[in-house]
Image (cartoon, rainbow, N blue to C red):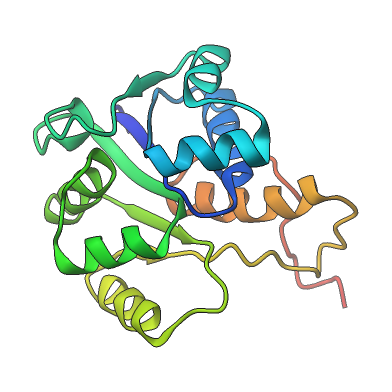
Length: 190
């Protein structure tokens, strides 16, 4: 893989998943573009006491304006290896399922689908309404990886960070980025 990875953060709760994913991608030596919706700005401030600008500066990322649907992340000809929307709100899920690309997050997701790039969405809604389930099934049928933020407990997590890392490890696996988060199951555990 020689292109960049686009990480979009929408307004769903779970901004810590997105921030940790960004940290791990940078640690893995990947070039990353960050897109954060207006709602994500609120969630990042409330849950992580930070801003998209501060995260981008701290990690050396390219921050793109969520209102700029002409940015590099929205281009089918750009060298983009994968798009991850983490967390992914119910509104973003609905827009993707309806083909609505009214901001850079949804445009990047739809371009990933049309270009057959890996698109991973991390829904963080609970409970899920029937409309969410139907939209997720539709997206899954189109090849989108639906990876809900549902940490496993067979790894015996001892902190919130352990549970966040469990989900981030699954995301990294889906976009073929090597990592050392947690232990892999060997079959000898039981």
